[in-house]
Image 1 (cartoon, chains in turn yellow, cyan):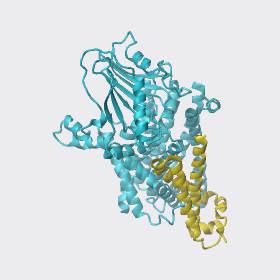
Image 2 (cartoon, one colour):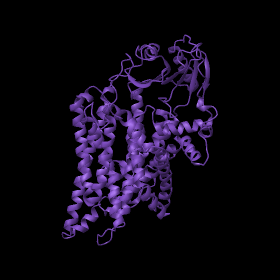
Image 3 (cartoon, one colour):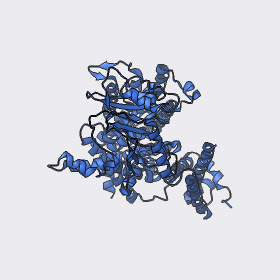
Length: 104
Length: 524
């Protein structure tokens, strides 16, 4: 049971870290233009990015406590950033799911 | 700052790649050990049923041996399923052994150094006899920190290009993109790894400097480097009068209870040392070198009097030592945390990519507009291909040699385990020469060799041990299956790399109207 809870919390931490990187990447005009064609990225994206990153940290601490979270969190964010950078290059259409409500 | 980054990179690059690559492999050392030493592929994790009987059998029950004076037992854990023991005896004999924990039966003699005795020592001292290897790796770690700091200073658009990779641009641009991406994104990890590596061996490095001073005595070095409390180690000499010893199983439990209470989490003793065995002054040191659910390693130790069972010394380190233990723990990753272990592996590979792409950018920036290459560029390219992809080829050859050489192999006095290492270095030097002679297509050749060796290693593992992927995955034998799967992934990546290298080659042939020398220069 605890191992299942561990797994779920870990997945949540990984997903929120990936979301954080996606939102922060889209908040940059160059990437926002590449994905949506529009010129001005909404300001709320940056907030959503840092919010997701904070949430990811909370999940990391919940799963492992502070000293493991200090390792897990930066590594999840780094892997997320690498994934998003590769997606921006090779599969930009996939990132449309992160545009979601921000594009109005 | 630019020139510092450039030249530190060119000078330390090959050395840093070696340390990074070997460190990345060492993340999965115990798994690679089980792959390379099939006799240790024990299916389930067992604790010794009766630790006292095990110790007694080790120490006394062998009629061919004299009595023991010292017994060490490293208890099994999830990643290393067998127990490691060391016994030294009255007559001066001493030997290591590996046992199945439940029955105490000896495993067959190891005939391979595996990852723990090859990749790991390569990682921290390059296997060079004497102090030179220690010095070089220390300098590489300092160089790494210097390169990280200067890299941040000279990077013009850290945030604007944080997520940027443009493979379709010229190789000079795309290799710089990849260099920046892998470097910036994993910067905290790479800094932590270099710094914690330095701090892990701060004692050894201190000794190096101290020893290098003229007129220093060994005893002074020991006193200077090791704390006055000797890291909690308890010492007393044998009296020379034999005595009965108390049972040790309850003492292990007592130590675990003390630690569990101290850290409010379940603690497991994993290492024990019995000193002055059978003497009135016999005592046992119990440690937990590698706590499962803590980042610190090798913190606590308790010494028990084996005549009475009383605690002689209960050691917990002070704040500075604890900080050092924490940093060492971050570097050694002996805790149980599979997601983190994989993330360390990815971070290590990113470090290798960062170093290799740094080299590519440097070379590309020095090739003339007409495609001419100064001699130093050709030389550095030969060295670079040899030091990066060549080292990966040699690693593949090391694994293949491990599965090809028969158990009793020996060649002109070189034991089988050492033959594997000779194989590694022979192939590595071969790739260096090859890259120097054929330097423009060296990358493609190396990628092909890596793919072929990786697939061969997987097939040979299945054929020679019977533990093919269907069986290992079916039985949940993930250490062996994991190594095989990573090898297959490596083969896949090398195929993609070859296709990509060929495509670039064709692209430039068409664009340049068939002037081969120039396009080939674009390639690498």
